[in-house]
Image: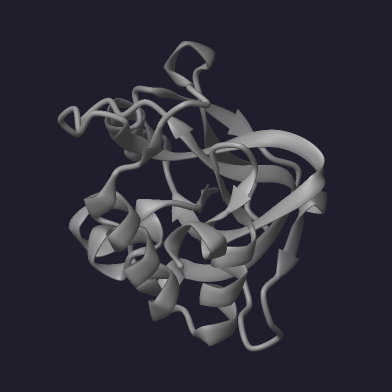
Length: 169
């Protein structure tokens, strides 16, 4: 079985359940080598002017992000998820990039670990977060505890390298 790292709207427990994920096979993780940024043009949300960005993860060795590792997924599940995430590429992530978020969580060693990163033609540095999407992500981050929420604010960027914490204040 394979696993998926999610770092945006799917950190919200309601979205996870709605999309058929089991909360029992989900645990918080730190992912080294990726920067989370609101730079992705949406594929499904209607145009909201300049406030239309959704989250993307770009490879960058100096950054990290927190997210969820969802294990126990099969190929059929990914076929459906690839359609949902059509503005993104599914990439493999080495297990060496992952750290447990805290010692109370355990997760199996999946055969393959995947994450979605934005397609280059769907990225823009001049858009701001979609308001409804942002609130959904913030609510999701809160659901995983205070430390997870604070790390989400301090490892997420908006245009011009502004931290999300500064953007929402």
